[in-house]
Length: 433
Figure (spheres, helix red, strand yellow):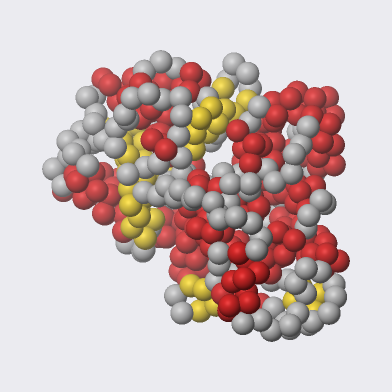
């Protein structure tokens, strides 16, 4: 397990310079040797087996052209490039098509994806895939585009309707190879085993989960983030923050996911607001691209929690930006989850820049740190212009019972660190109104 005060990136501490040495909630924490820290960590529970699903990853400015080489290595002759109209207007698919053509590939472009991809959109993309005799899927876009691409791949290999595959490991047959090129800094869909689709008959989002959905290749080019509108930058950044926090406290977390979760939290805390104020700054954009990637690696293996389980239902009902909904819900979910045991939230608060130190085993300090973390998430959301409550984005008291019922069936709730029944979920929705 990686402690928060030992998490680093490229020769620089992510969070060490953000904290003072004043104690929080109790006596000053004594200095402990590495052996003592290891003993403390090992005493928290019996080690578990840990699986870690991950695609091949290429990260760095200017890496877009590598998508063509990746497609060729995966056997492409007629790739389907999945994207959306906004990306087409920005010119990125045109650039990628040129690289694919240089590699000798005959590419079909399909851009029929809207935010929060719908079941009928995925069916339409699958028709194009089959009619054009495509073989490999390349996705260039945000989470909606990537989820749509996964859905098309799933249908190409297994047939039927996308809603047939709601749940865990429902696909029986192989799917086509997938190359993902994310254009936002938050969803993590390019490395995840999730596919989130709007079921338009029920006005809800369904979660499809399976290791077959982990892409073959993720190519992260921070240059693509420079054309995001501010609202999308804010929404996807809050999504990455939610991924990191929920993965760190998830029941399925492990030492491999903990490292990536804390890195993601610290990187978002340091860089998201800066990308809003200085959108052309390369360093901040690259750090947010890394944050999105690390958060994706954490949550695809540790899964998520109540904030996502609840957010999926609101997004399906009202077709709203997923990350914005997370920004409203997350402080309330942090408080709910921290109430029985706040200690797991101490490293999260430290990664976000909690002043001072928390004495080991100090319950008072842990309670204060968890509340500080919830407040800091709300402060960031305020700086980004996120509404104060769900009522401002269209949720009403009358929606609470059905939203709560659907939340209980969401796969993400199963790994929330605290058990939650319908009354608990209804109370959380009402608190967030």
